[in-house]
Length: 224
Image (cartoon, rainbow, N blue to C red; front, side, top):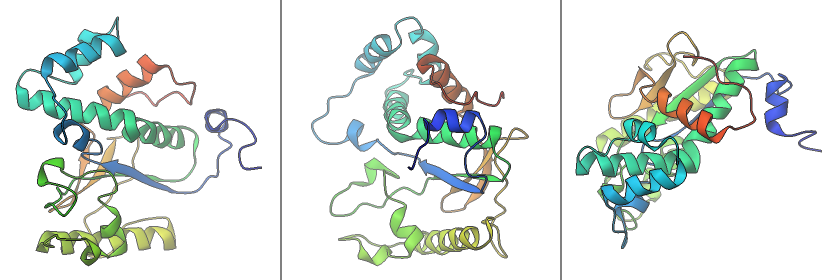
């Protein structure tokens, strides 16, 4: 059967498949739920949610997800929604493989904002699944969207990265920005954008907070 025991236990024991891992998420995974539709977002409402979700740690949470200005509040609410949806769990997976695995781990963040199409306004940014057409080179399949030069460039890069990784277990190749291995030395990831570049994770404290608050029974995160 597929899982002989819970995945957290498998990773804690180092019994996962010891193969290279490439994983990540998009910069604005759940922003559409904050800025779109009939949602009436407010900084006060977000602070109230913090108190509901983290009754004894709300002040610490709001230091990591700032509501100092209306713009910051929207960004923080979007980030938290994305973290709850997919970012934290993917981060936890990457951490577990880094901690007990024996092969390289490569992390990415897809950050090129969507120009807008039939179903999305530019305000939603780089939303969930927005990276798929870039990876598969199918940008022209999108309805009512103007494909920009930076979209073509990034799609070409991503196709090369993913193909290299599938062939060799390493996304790097000639003419591509250097993609470092993710790990304790710097916690670097590849930010896939108009000008793709490796950058240090600036939100590690956020994920460590969520990890502690939610007390997931998985492999202990590697310390910063």
